[in-house]
Structure formats: C-alpha cells, structure tokens
Image (cartoon, rainbow, N blue to C red):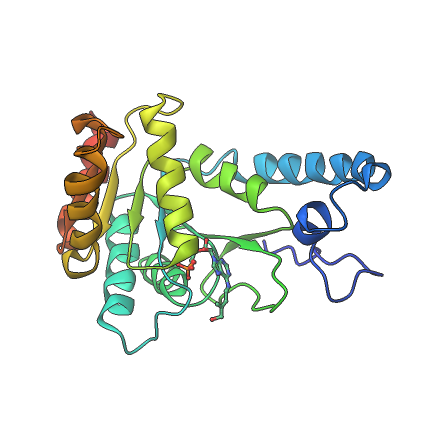
Length: 234
Ligand SMILES: C/C(=C\CNc1ncnc2c1ncn2[C@@H]1O[C@H](COP(=O)(O)O)[C@@H](O)[C@H]1O)CO
C-alpha cells in the first residue's frame, strides 16, 4: 500500500511542517487547533498500517548516496541480509541509502517499508517500497521508526541521518526504549564521530561510558545483521 495523500490543496509551495513551525505561523493558534486533528490522524494511520508488521529494523543513511557508491551496494546488502534473517526493513522511503535498503529487502522477498515525508522538493517514495506511508510531520514519522523497529542500522549520512541516530541514542540513554541495538555501518565514515564522542564529549563528562557502548561500528554487513538477530533472540 502506498498512500500519496500528503498534499493539502490550497497550500501549494509549503509543507505542513513549515505551516506548523516556521516563523510567522507559530502563533497561528486558530489553525493549530485544527492541525491537532491532522496530526492525530497521522498517528492513527501509522499505527493502523504498521501494527501487524512483525520484527523490523530501520535502516537510515543519506538521501544523496548514488547508486555507484560502495555504500549504496552495502545498503542493498544490509536490506537483503535483514530480510533473509526474517526482519521487515523500514526506511525513510526516499532515494539514496533508503532506496538501496528497500531494494535489498524487496529483492530478498522481505517486507520493504517506506515512511516518506512531505518535503518542499518532492521526491516521492522509491520504487522498492511495498508498504508506504507519506507523513506530513517529521515528529509523527520519527515515532513510527522507533515504535515499529527493534534496532537501527545507520549508513553514512548527513543531518537527517544524525537526527534519527541521536534520537534513538537519547531514547536508549533515558530508558524510553530498552534493548535497542544501534549499528553504524562504515568505519571510515563513522570512526571520527566515535573518536570525538570519546575524546571530547565523554572527556567533558557530558556522556557516560555506557552511552558510548550503545554504538557498534562495523564494516561487515553480516555483523550488523547478526547484532540485530542477537538482540531479537535474546
Ligand atoms: C535530498 C533529496 C531527497 C530527500 N528525500 C527524502 N525522502 C525521505 N526521507 C528523507 C529525505 N531526505 C532526508 N530524509 C530522512 O533523513 C535521512 C537522510 O537524511 P540525510 O540528511 O540525507 O542524511 C533519511 O534516513 C530519511 O529518513 C534528493 O536527493
């Protein structure tokens, strides 16, 4: 199923998130009352569509990863490996690393899920999504990633990927979710972040050693899949 109803006629050129959050509209309380109903509907649709998904892993990574990048290939492999291990694969439904993981999952016969987001530059769901939902609001969509997955595999990415990664880490740190493996795939890309977290953030006392231990960095797709299987079967 792929719903494509996120556009609001009469609001061409802006997104629902902008109308909720952007300067000039923040104090628009009259419309905000009605927005609450749309936000509620988005949660209802997400919960309704994903409730029967079964064990799933979310794969994140850059929307800009090109098909000729080694990380695109790794995305395909991780999608395939997770599907072969019995997981549904959830991504942001967009291009790049998301498309790669959806493709691997679909080609392996797994359930390939895309949680798209309404953006000013519309890209639409990638063609490898079997179960697709388009969200207007980032925060509703982010709830779905965490609620319906049992762990995250994170390929190299930018701000959107960091947002998803650090939200998961914060939820684990504050024990809002427990037993939630987070694997960073690609040591050449991620090791610098790990070094900074250890040498600067941990050294400043702003995180605990246990917080750093939440993260596994690997170059092995098999190891990433194994970490998810181990947490599922524990
Ligand atoms: C940039 C382009 C299209 C963007 N389309 C997206 N579609 C769905 N989800 C997206 C998109 N862009 C970002 N996201 C979310 O953030 C993560 C990737 O962000 P990053 O900044 O690229 O790392 C991703 O996991 C999505 O959930 C046109 O090429």
